[in-house]
Each structure stands twice: as C-alpha cells, then as structure tokens.
Length: 268
Image (cartoon, rainbow, N blue to C red; front, side, top):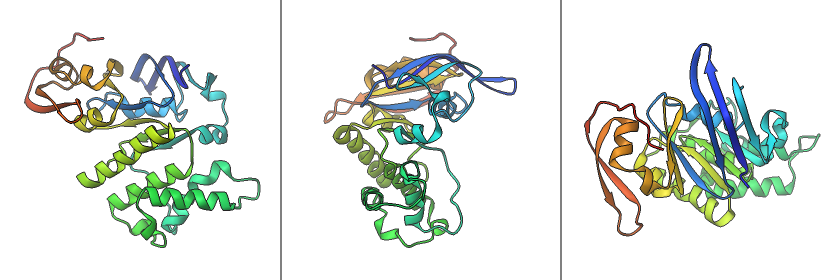
C-alpha cells in the first residue's frame, strides 16, 4: 500500500496552471528523484504532496488520509520537508537551528527531553556539522548552511523525507556526502526519500525511481535505466545525449550533446 498518493491533482498560481491532473503513488522505503526542466512543476509537486500548498483540484493522501485533514504537527511527525533555500532565523546557533526539527515531538511545555537532545546530537553527527554547534547559523557559508538544514530535517526523525534540491550550494564532494547520507537513511533505516534534483546523473546514481516532469505532467516514471534514455532526454530536456552504463553499479550515465527542438509527443 502506498504511503503517499495523489489523485488527479491540479495546482494553479492565479490563472497559470502548474500541475495538470497528475496521479502518482509513493511506496514505503523507496528513494525517488523528481527531475525536469525549470518550470516543469517539480518543487510545486513536492509541496503539494507535503500538504504545503492548496490544490485546485484532486486529492493528496498521507497514510490513506487526505493530507489537508491531517494536522500540521501530526504530518510533521511522519514527513519532513526541506524547502529550497530556506531563510535562516537570526540569532540562532547551529545547534539551536537543528533543534527546531524536534518541534513536532515537544510537549505543551516546549522543553526538550534527553531523547530530544540525543536526536539532535545524532543528526548533527550524521550531517557532519557537530563541530559547528556553537557557531551563529547566519554566519555559515552556503554549503555549511545546507548541511545544517539537512541535520534539522534528520532531527525530526520522520519516516518520510522530502527535500527540494538538497545539494544546492554544495561542492561535488559534499553533494556525494549528502546523497550518501540520504541513501544510508533509505537503506538502513527504511526512510522514504523524495527529492528534487537538477543533476540527472546523480539522480540516476542514487534513485530507485525517477519521475520526469514536463509542463506540469509526468512524462516518464520508472527506474533510472528506463528514464535516462536518449529519447526521453530529448523529449523532456530538449538535448541530444550519449548514454553509458557505469560498470560498477549498472546505472546509466549521460553525456549531454547539442540542444534539440522539444518534441510534443509523450512517452509513458
């Protein structure tokens, strides 16, 4: 049974339709990447599935309950959502920022328990930010700040992780570090991970499933080897691509070629 499901959801900003009658389901314990060109609806879809924005039509479900009827605290205990480039509150240390991830678990007093403190310590250790604990969060570099946000997401200890471009601001070594961590959470802790990625090769390396969006609809939804193909890359991104297979992993790897006119036919 899927833990997240969308039935013919529609989303519009004013008069502009962004997501068009989109249906999908997400199974427990999978690692999924949303890919597509700018403006294809990736971030909007992620927000909709997390209950962050209002739907124009259709329904989104979390654990078979319509998510708009689920309280925000109850949702946050099940699902962590890290938006794209969040603003850092002024005056907080790194540890205080990571501790915000424990909010859904706090009682009426708002005081943190020893269990909360252990969860914060573990999250900071896993995200490699423990040495930054006392630093003012607003003084961090973009890459350091992104790792702190990921630590906050991990401190929430939810079973479902939604991340909008989690590798933003990170150099390649830290991108690999973060994606290795998310893969570790997926494989060893059975966390369900859904993320927006712009780097299709990283999506192919780490994902069980890739959902390729174009113009607010799902153009392809399958394993990396079935999505990262010359035909689909031409239709979704308008590029000519050379596809190779990484011998160590069996995963596809593409080398972009020239730009091509986008085709209008859809591959299911």
